[in-house]
Length: 620
Image 1 (tube, rainbow, N blue to C red):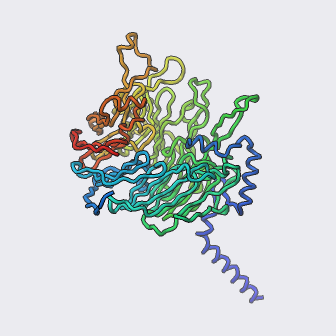
Image 2: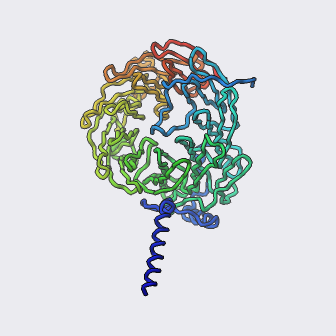
Image 3: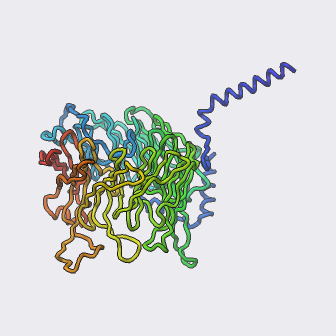
């Protein structure tokens, strides 16, 4: 009896040891969130799942419908010397240490410019010696690139590579640019599908790709990865899925590639959840969101659908040194505006959403706005709901224990939210002014920059007419009474800025009191309206370029001047829209005391001191 007890104890002890030692492995697949993701046991199970989903939702008879809506269909050289400075601007990103792909990058001496199917490498510093060194020509469409040391990672889309997968593949091409005059292609890794987004953390580029689960002849397929001459199919056993899929039959694949170690194999994971709509990335985790787009008939006798998003699914993926591990899943009511509506802080995930319908009259509007705080397993820990009924979120920014939220329909409420207690978020204060902000950027811990549009309230209906581009500086030191302490309006109705849609076009440096943004200016000829200008009147385009401001708490916003690339008005107006012109300034950056403005056809170099021109290069 004693011997049997000892044997039983030994078996139990060994079992405990085995479980404990395997916990890191088991936890990679153990989900504690609001619902679980599973992996398929076989390709046959995957086919059965898709077949059953089609029977549940037969109106999704076109597996490519969502993707169509979302994407639309040398000389002898020697190594160059290095004089790179530390005083230069980087890409404007959401999270420090998490780089975002762009069409312009600099390392403080060289500038890399992408346009159409080319990337041009230029020696940029000093400005007086600027020159073109080389150009890389691509076969497909340029989606953006990263520069890390002497490695250039290019994200390229090819819409004619694979008939089975909607004629699309996405490639990550790594060039060694130690010799800037002779870039050398070191790696070429491709995967089926359309490029969605990417990030770079340390040595690794993480890329998200959407691809259909059906071929053009309606056969179930799996994503494939192409490395040099080898093809690898992602097995069904590595595909995550959920019974709450949005029924669009689209894979989202995550591919991690080391851009410094050319011999390290890429890692990957795939999710059969529909096409990713939004992405937030911290130093440790990816959060990918999928809307639950519920279709319903407009009227019982009509055969058309309206898609409404009543909730958003969130999936958390841990990333570390190229490893990709699924962690948890959750969901919140409403839909997400963009990446700035999400944030990770102190092991919690915060997300701002809008739910319902926005209309011009209060009687028709059903929208409301919400902020949710989720725990480490994506369970809702706290919430603040029904903010600004009848309006929708135009911009959001999480900063530490606070969230700044702009909603809009007729006036612009800037909300200051307290998130110190994750289980009990609350409103600290709000400011109502005309206009709204599409983008919020921290000035310091007590001040926020907003870029959006000025507005004029409509005489009838609960809405407002957009006017010129508006830059605001908000003082939130008194959280209960935020104030707009400075503002500047550019142009009339029709004036636009890329910053309203792309935060990477925004250049700000507090230490230099520098704010720069590309704008296309529209102005109204008042002589055409002797009886007064109606608020819905558009101006005529008169100028495109970069507006350069001095910005400080003491001095507010002071326009230093503008820099344009157009030789004459026809450079811009012949395209019909200023940002469509190859002479439209799209990005700006600085190196030392020099401001560089960049369009598809030119780079101009002007001093920051007085904007005097130093040099100009015409791009091929």
